[in-house]
Image 1 (tube, rainbow, N blue to C red):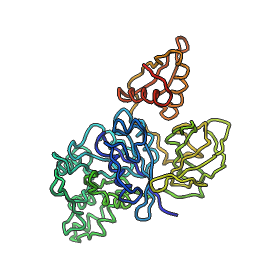
Image 2 (spheres, rainbow, N blue to C red):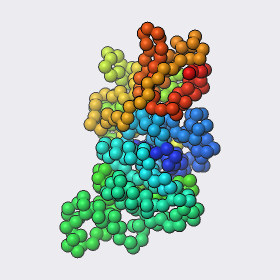
Image 3 (cartoon, one colour):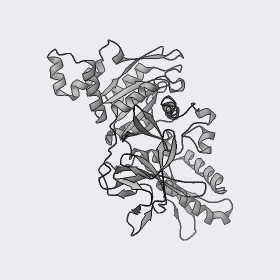
Image 4 (cartoon, rainbow, N blue to C red):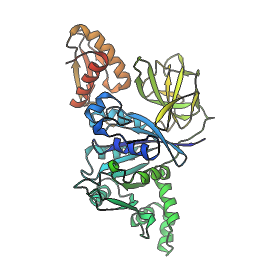
Length: 420
């Protein structure tokens, strides 16, 4: 069975997450051409609203193969108003790529995301992007990371001609340079390594690589890569890094069934699609799955599996993989499938700050509005939809103005309901 890694790409808005995802897919051979956010033709920003606005609104999943490893990617929103989408994605990850712009550097959302990844002990690679842009400064960003985020960071490349289209990269381990970052960090983490080094035994490239892989996969140190995804710079190094510095997903298909629902969508025919990460066991078509806290079980009618840039119909999914299940009408985001597992994380980064009333401009459509919001709340439980019993006013919880605008647009586009 092919090894699997489930990764998330997270960042402050406009750091270049979706462009990185697009290039990972292209350089791995999963897609034939690179889409662009400004042209609205990327693989993961598939909603019409995402294409119009040039931002990721909903987390999306896609996969590629590299070095005989299947990598499932979850591309997450960067805007703070959609942090709940990020929360739900983190619960299924084996590793995360935290993207930082080489121009703007560390921003507010960057800190929040890093602290959350650190607290959850999710192995993390840091990718400093946009080094072809005027004003980019890799050395400054790297020092800021060491000072303000973690001193357990190891740069794996040197970069030259930063801030121009001529920018290029050399891997440190492909040169004769001793990687002082690696020596310092490994000396702090590994007492035996430190004793040998002090005793005059110089570590070779293979030993350093082996130790870096071990401690990075445990979440004890953070490899730092760099590049410019828009021109493909640094992408193949990042692909190698994903397979070297992240742990593989468990593949215990014979253990008890254990998984979590992390995303819900609906088809154009209003059929529910339940995204599940399996940590143990397997699920086959026609299996009956117990609904949490209810005395009912529902039959799996169809399974889709992520496969090299697309989805394919499958007879089953197994531990370590992500599947899209049809027929589970009662399941909600966050539901545990089978037994709980210590890898299933209960995550709360932030709560919505705004509670607001929402009403159809055509008041006769308010019952339709409530029904539509009920469906949308299945996808985003933090909306916490409620209706006042006395005056029948509808309330939702939101993170901010951008989410409010997006919700209004979705109600109009999907259900033909204009709201105020």
